[in-house]
Length: 318
Image 1 (cartoon, rainbow, N blue to C red):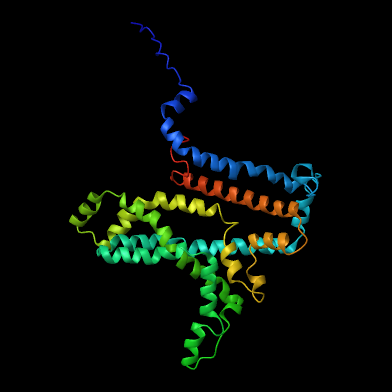
Image 2 (image 1 turned 90 degrees about the vertical axis):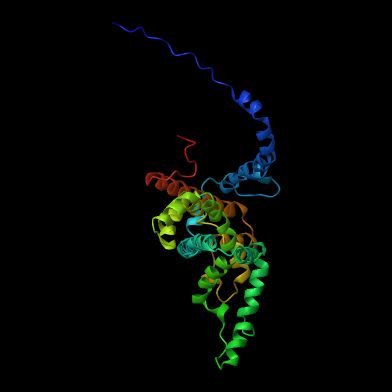
């Protein structure tokens, strides 16, 4: 018996405008953020054309003459540029290894702490440094580590000669890492604490009944449950490998260790404000940095998806 084919009912696709009108409250709520991104993030992208121009103030950005890839040719002939790129990648790579796990560990320790009042006090203490600017933090560190500072004062009472901590190139990078952890570890741990609070408490209860120790519950329940959050934060961190640290290093560096602390952002600052300005050249450096960051971000996202992670977009693009 031959079955008669029946046509599926026609599914009418709703227009985008219909969907917007249907959820107009949500779009109105998001409108200020959308406007902010358009005005301050997307519209300024037109200024990237300056990377291919020789900027003349009297002609403005749009009227300045085109030089094609001339700014990039000058860029790749500058040894200081490659040194700053190498320094930036090295500092961010070491920071990724040393600093990235710190808020994860702190969030787990907070979660395991049973004294709620003491826990709230510790969270406040660890989070407070985030709200201090690097100008303040840099001044504090300089006062503590200066030749006549607190640390050298304590060393002198023990008969130890004073030492120039901020004048030692070998010590400058560890100071960067330690100060970055001290300032941001509490604030970054909030994201992981939020992920931990979303774990079903019944999993811990079942594991405890089965005789699992607290350490085993962390290894087999807590860490696997927050792994998607860790992956997303790692991907986002990879997207900023060519940036960051400007405020921190700018407020901690001095002439003695300047060569050991010039990251790409400091290189842009130096060529823009400490010599005859060449805004086309500076824009070319910034564009190069942005492109590399985008490549690293997309690569990290693809690797995450390849190993079973959801990536930044999750299931939205599937």
